[in-house]
Amino acid sequence: MHAQAILYAVYMLILSIYVLYFIEEKTVLSILFAISMLLSVYEAYQLWASPMSYAKDLWNYIDTARTLSSILYFAISLNPQDWEINHDILVFLVIISWLRGISYFRIFQNTRYMVNLISEVIKDMTSFLILLFYSTLSFAFIFLVLDENDPKFLDYLKMSYRFDVGDFDTSGMSSIEWVCFILVTLINMIVMLNLLIAIIGNTFGKVQENYQIADTHELVGMIIEIETMLVKNRKISDPCYFQMCIDSNSNDNKDETDKTIPLKKHIKTLQAEIAKVNEEVNAVKASTANIEKQLEMLIEMKGKSDEQKPN
Image 1 (cartoon, rainbow, N blue to C red):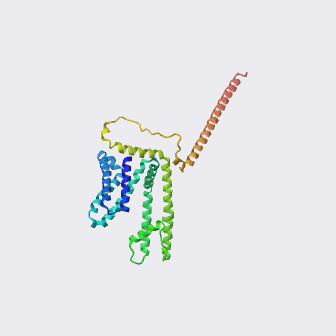
Image 2 (tube, one colour):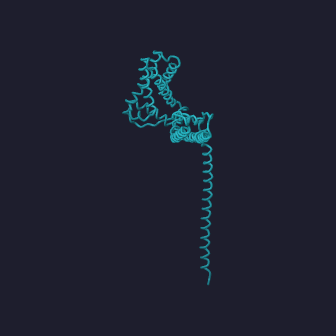
Image 3 (cartoon, rainbow, N blue to C red):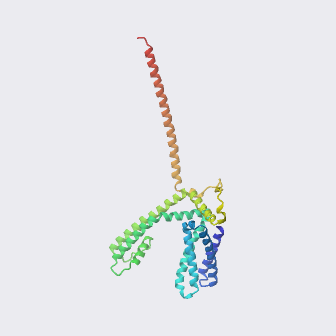
């Protein structure tokens, strides 16, 4: 895994140099294409070794897109007349290559946690993004109707999105447009974006609480990825333990920033107080039972003494 990460780092370095200085240099492009094919050989072997596991990993689809765009870009680069089309492919290749590089940060413990956090935030943002898209689309139609000229819907959709991120121009707005502008800033900028911050904060706390589990899950996932490629060892089915060495004197800095720590401490304090109250209640119950028993004995003794008295 480390060797693959180093090779991918070299690939990204050459890609960056190619884009910055040698955009039309065929020699640098050939080196870049050769490294890309080496990475693709690894992916092809992984697909052959375990097709089901390969299909379940999203990063593999990104790698497939990178490989196909690399082949397509190199093939079209042989014909300089198609530079405009090839330029778009290069843009896509750069985006997908940098995106794929995020997965290699899982190798390191400190950044592995951040990769998991990003994926969890994206999952939790799905419902929010649907509502934000609906709100943005609705205000795009509202401003489209307000324009009495020959408006283009795409332009107003872009403008509505710019309102979401705080990029707007209020010059020349009519009264009704000001009313709609106030609504879009209240709903999309204040309410929706603050809701997004709350969602991210909630996801952060959830990931922090299950940090060790998520970290180990990512680590085991990478180990399984390597083991599935060791085809010769598949006949070995002896069970074994996964061992992890942890420094007992080390403090996990991430727990210090956990927002749930004060709540956990308060819960522990309440649990201790409840346990103390339960002990006192049990002591009172035992004392009450003892008193009742003594009363019964006194009543029984009184009854016997009354029976022994002469008439």
